[in-house]
Length: 229
Image (cartoon, rainbow, N blue to C red; front, side):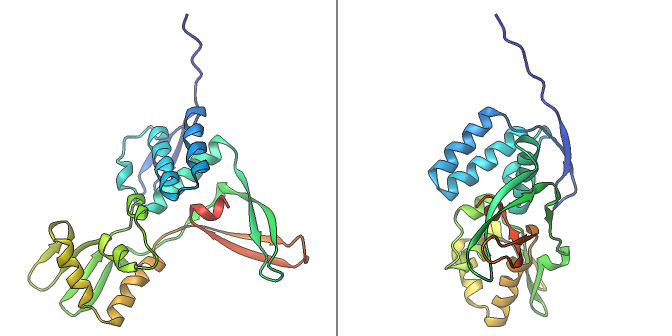
């Protein structure tokens, strides 16, 4: 005998980087199991994969989840979590005055994504030579190495151009891209690193009063990890 089918509500949101409207449903017990197993592993790569799998399952609109930027995916997941589990989450924030942690309840419903001008994707190296970047996807983040930012730069080059033509990164070899990056000077490299510093991020300012010293303090949560620590 077939058991009853439970109806699930549908919601809409806009993908931050494109403005595309998508329809989604809250995640269910089957998705919560995926997240729980990944969380227990304490492995960042596994947790990122689980987040991507859950987003893919819950989006009713057909899109290529692999192509989503990191901040798009984090924003979508926070909306899913808000509709599925609740709009608030408790995080532990360290006081800047006494260095002790205070539990703070954070409202996820008004988390925003910072803006960046499209023109900032284009980085001028010389008068006739430049680079156009793309935002990293979550798969790029799997191999992120903060000790070697060159890897992140190379992965996120869309194309290089000069006065004669455009050179797509996808059609260049790793050796060619490495050679190009190695030819940059300190100023050029600084421009490319600034792209990552200023790229859009899931962000929220959190004001709180320290339970230990009583001082008013604030903390800006940036990225998924800061909302679930």
